[in-house]
Image (cartoon, rainbow, N blue to C red; front, side, top):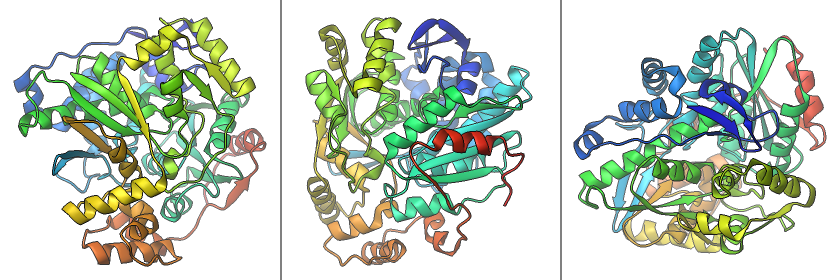
Length: 484
């Protein structure tokens, strides 16, 4: 199975090369030429542990690695990294079902892929006889940055550079990044929003070249980020069957808090691989561009950008939507190139009626304000003593009818001030004091990795403007070392 660029189907590469490149040279995203099928029987699905299930799914999506290599990457990547018995936990709260994806080292769902990606990169370099250093460029709206930094820190043959919006992440998210250790890590704040950071990183891919290194990405534009996320949809389905919430073969809906469209696209990928998924409900906050697109077929980023209580979803250019559009238009790469050119030029494009009919077969949408999502978070806590974060609350607000699984993407302690305020408690100005107060009030233990952040030394203090990203990347990639 080969991978092709969404903007040029003649750009065909093996999965391992697509993973190393991250972004295609033409600016497109790599997708499988044909989506592989996975046919788990009931007993096999229910009996597999999470590592085996993930390895079998990745073996289908990344076939040139070989199953033994994939299994080794998954088992060693996950070993000892999670504070739960399994990496993913399904919890039933009344009639609601929450798939908790935040039990990893950085307390966010990005760990599910980024614990594996460094090993996959190393294996891909070996497979392709590449000896150059790999430099990972990443734009983050809050969670990807820390997960990438933690995953790649001091991994031989790699460096990782992260850009985040200076005033667009929570205090805990910022502290996680700027205190990151590792002689191959670099973090820079952007005087702009996530879209500015993402746009700058994409430009750098096209303009920065070096004889001694290759650039790659840890964002979900990289198929190595996206593919592992399909596994937890299969895992959720298995647990819903095992717990008697559905019968094997029944369709299961998923509601996903969505910013860059990667997490929900992984659910669509799982469905195309054969999982009985019903509706995929795309949940947005006040930056409701995806809700408007799914409702109207018009993607229009010419709108006000809001800073919300769910900052990881504060995005107006959802990169992974391009992959879905490619399949929705019958793999018409010339049309995708035109739509993306329209978006770059006018911040707007219009999908065809045929494309929207294709998309609406699988996707629904919903959105809410901070007030609505936080009110629901308080109601669930008061009724069931279940504590959710701000992004999960957005998804819970938009969740459909049973059977439905809500993806819980981050620890509530990453956004303690907002959750503490939602519960009617006084909110200290200091984010870490708010974390302590939330733990004291609820009795729900905070992740140890977050509680210890306040004692860590700030190591990364770089800041650059939105038009300076390319020059910053070129300068830093040219340095022999980032050791501090």
